[in-house]
Length: 297
Image (cartoon, rainbow, N blue to C red; front, side, top):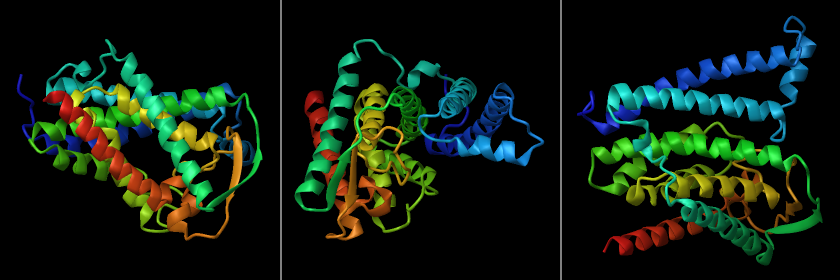
């Protein structure tokens, strides 16, 4: 069946406010549910303040709220694919058949990518290791939360936004640019994101490296596991994730030496604020494109 709205870019643009409204509604239900289950006295300002202070990555509350966000995304996607796109929900790239290899490659590539960047910053004297924190039990909750968050964003920005934009153009780079712009804008309120010109540029470029494989495979598992690994390993190596503190599970503590400009070290935004990361993201996007392009020949 033909989509009710013919233009894929228009479908993607209409989808965004729908998604935000549903997410706010579902997360509000989630917050109230957690507050009631936790015995929070909603008439007591001190009790409310204490509730919102406990918002670390390894908090069970954060895991629950991320789950509600994922539920809201699935609800919006089901409605949009069924009544606007008139396609099955699985068409966004949810098939897991013979995809274990893509999952492992995505995770391994993320470790290689983030570990390599950490090594480069050490070698050029941009950061100093100040200690080794060791294993923290909270890493299990963090892992589940980060995976759900990564899967959530990939469902929306690659599974629906990029997918629909590709329906209206034969040029994958135009579709990638459109989805990447929306992806960057979603993170435009993050701490220190405007500290230099690099963070927002890197977030835009990240949409390309996460999406380039999807333009060939129309499957979400490589970008999902790469996205999850990107965030998880950043925290493990002690880097902020898009400006957000990672003390709850980092295993290595380090500090910027101040010997190089913030656009090289990443500054307060973390590794995603570094021109080295931006350069590697662009290069790896090109390499992934060439890999899939050769497979199609």
